[in-house]
Image 1: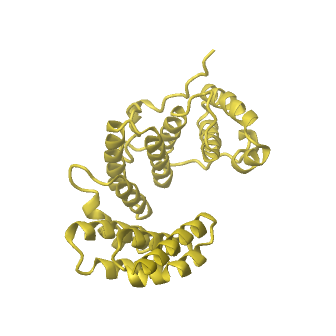
Image 2: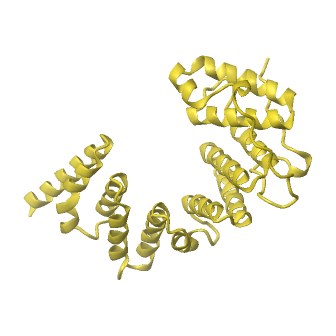
Image 3: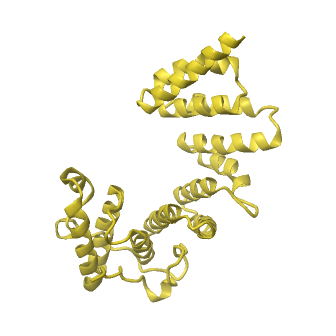
Amino acid sequence: ASSSARRLELSVERAKILLDLGRAREAVVALEPVLRERPDHEDVLALVIAALRAAGDDARALGILERAAEGAPLERRRKLDLERGKVLFSLGHLSEALAAFDPHVRGRLPDLEALAQAAEILVALKRFDEASALLERRSELLLDRSDGPGLLANDRAFAELARASGDRAAEIAAIEAALSRVPPEELPEPSLLGLAARLAELLAVEGRHRALGFLERRRATWVAQVPRDAVERHLSAAAHRRPAPACPPTRSSGPARPAGLPARGGGARAPRPEPG
């Protein structure tokens, strides 16, 4: 028995290494005997689902999750439903995914990941007000935890929501909120450089030249520190980009503002000048 347990343990360790190396299909093969032996073990199941999803086999991952949920205790079933919602979302079953997330976005302490994914689904379904309400709730929870990276991700979600709904002023405010969370002297992740480029487009369209000047100076500081290939992938000077298409005038209703931003009626704040 101990020999069998050790063999399974080695299979799990091998699968983790294969996953880290990006060899997801081999990880799935390594986990097959473990899954047969311990189909209800939480850690094993989580690893199998991660490997299947990394291998692009969401359909099989969904089947395993649904079988595991049958007859499981309530709390365990709730956790499995959360994973099931993620897989359903990946498969494009938006309404089913939203239903799976529903218990996790209600109550006093909703799940942060469920809030984010449910909001993304609602944006895809063009239910913008509902998506905004979930992101606002997520902001409140993140502020309570002083979770800077989480708030930055939420700002980006607000920006995507605003872009999808055609609310240019709200998109500007959300991107500015995201960029303001990165100290001027600190290099942001490359994807934020892309956000800065998008903001430059929007400010140019709005004719906000002073704010655009602040942004371009800050971008120049960042670009000087970023490898050239990353700059080419994520940035292009505003002068060389086609202006963003004009959007309908901002309505009084629509996506809520990101946490910490002024009310939209007064417009978005300008980026902070660099110290000194």
